[in-house]
Length: 497
Image 1 (cartoon, rainbow, N blue to C red):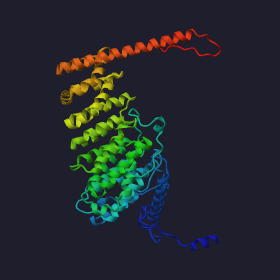
Image 2 (spheres, rainbow, N blue to C red):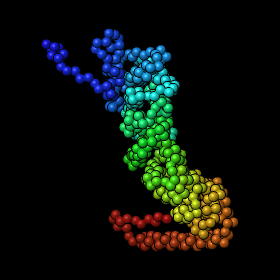
Image 3 (cartoon, one colour):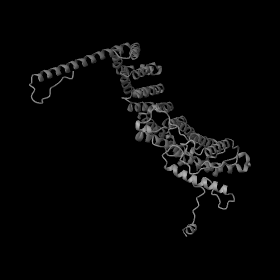
Image 4 (cartoon, one colour):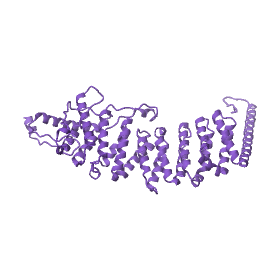
């Protein structure tokens, strides 16, 4: 009775363009039970896998509920007029996902899917003059979304304070299939058979945002593929360029001001490096704001060493395009100077040298006082690498020329640091470099050098006199305290010297 009642209920058929319908609905009147079974199984698995990907916390494909998938005929066995339909069918077949954590599970089906993906890549590479229609574009985007877009597990490195250059990379066990899907997407986007005006409806803002979220993958191979694909998307879909820049900016903001944890900052900066190189002159205000609000604060996180090379390249590109920005960049570096992190100080000094190589005299004079005050502190650093890197600035001819023209201001600032190092720095290399720089200043302007030396001696004598006076005051206090009897819990004054 219940069975008869249920059979009368209306059955809701899925929409043909929904994400769950990876294969076309199989007809109930199909004469082939094998074909009907294959269609229904593929449809059910696609829906299950799509729902699982929205809730899964695993970086690998979720387990499939289907135990078998069957291959379709090769492209060479069908006429040219039917190849595009077969292309869509094969894409639907690849919407089935498997659990790659178990290498012995569904091995036959995994191999069938791998061979099908290889066929699809070859077909897109040699599509000739035929154009991809909307059904094919939709099928490609749907297949890529089902296979690629997933939720990553919590990063175990987060508990240890973020990313580290020495951490071993984590490799996704699903990479044999992921790589083919990425290769297919790349060849599809770069294909001459793809019309960007048609494809932009499917490779839309939502699709691009999901791609950008994948940059947090721990697998460096996946991030490298994503970097190449995003380059091509930015180049082909001009209408999406402002949105791509804005979305990457948001990822940077979240990294700098909220989490300080992201695996793909280096790759995203590399993408922006090529974007910056294509900026037209004069630079738009939007791009200058990006430099000040995004690139400069990216010097703050303690994991900066992971992406320092790409960050430095982006900053240098801005300064080369518009030299007036050099003083703004230097002020930003001084604002975020890592006083207690010697490794970052060495990197900052290296980036500072690159900027000073391109700076003009006017911009240099705007920042030379706070700049060389900080360089003087680095010269006096007890960390020999910091002191050496600061003194190496005098090996650069352009920087020496800037210093020579402004020696009346710069030498009085750095002379005390050089003199203290010369009197006895523990590192012999730093000691020798300090002597060389002192000699260079003496040859540059002997009169100014002697005046600075005389002023340093006077200040040193005044400091010594103040220290002696303070020491004598403590002695008098100790003597006065010793004459007073100690009663109960009265504290005894002890000299700090």
